[in-house]
Length: 430
Ligand SMILES: [Mn+2]
Image (cartoon, rainbow, N blue to C red; front, side, top):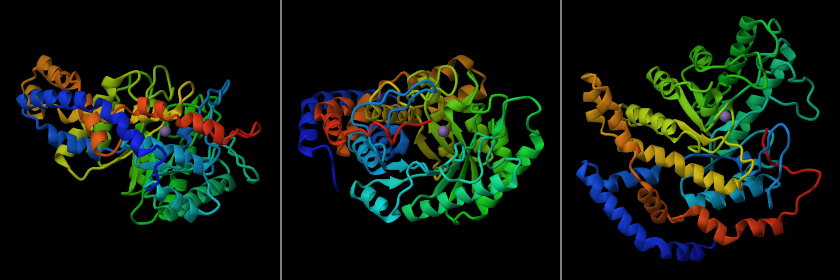
């Protein structure tokens, strides 16, 4: 396997921290043992945890006002995969990459697949794009795509999604994520029922073209780019569409796509109860769809979401939704943000394993509100960093990914090897 950070360098970096880690890990093992948890079993589950990196996340993002490109940014999908491989090498929590078409459309899918394989990277869910016009396309998406009032525009959007599925098949992907910006900016502009009907007809057509072992994930978003109404604006619309479409059509929850203060963990429970929770886009937000780093604003919410997921898995051990980081890194080095964020999501997952579920159930059944919330807090307040560090160390990653990455000078090397084309940056997100 090709590794872009020298493994000897990585090991040297780890060696300096290993004795401190061993001592912290043993202390935590003793502490957890007193509460009836075996640290090695938790460690084994931490090692299994994986979240996909979005290809576009390794480029610097921006706002609608400006984008300030970082140094040595990837200029094409191959360089994006290079960066993704570094994230995986150091964090050992991101073995898959989620592509966005047409941004990442390869000339030769086999070449791309082989390029990823040299790094042992696989492809997660494919993302289609009908929220912007592509050069040379006949119909415009200015007034919508899958829900457009014009059949020609809808057909074009359907054909694009089918093309994305066909490409994904060649790359080994198993899911298509569909997010559309369709909606309206003025009251009266769009007929609510007709636009939803059009959307349903369109996704059914895409669904019917899916391979048998594929899932289709419907991503809802409360607003933007449409500012008055959005066709798939909430989990209710998403659930209705998924249910109408078929068994392998599921809802995807992007944390930032809800109004502030919405109880996302309860949405998670509702969708899962009825078999329609298919995946997540992790990020964090303060005001809207801010696409901030996971866990940077509200880590407790992230923990509560994983608490629900662990509860679901306690009854159905095969339950395995798609996880992806969906963030825009405007002011940080995207590689650092993605490694740090992957660890934050992994941290929430690990803490959720340490909830005393039997005690929680008892407190719920006896209506002991104080002890119920304290049971959750007991797990949340634990410092489980030694488990994350040990998981990375044993998997060949870095005990401290960001520090190791900085010491490796990878970004500086990219800055030399990737001279930016002033007319085309080839990265970033909308
Ligand atoms: Mn998303």
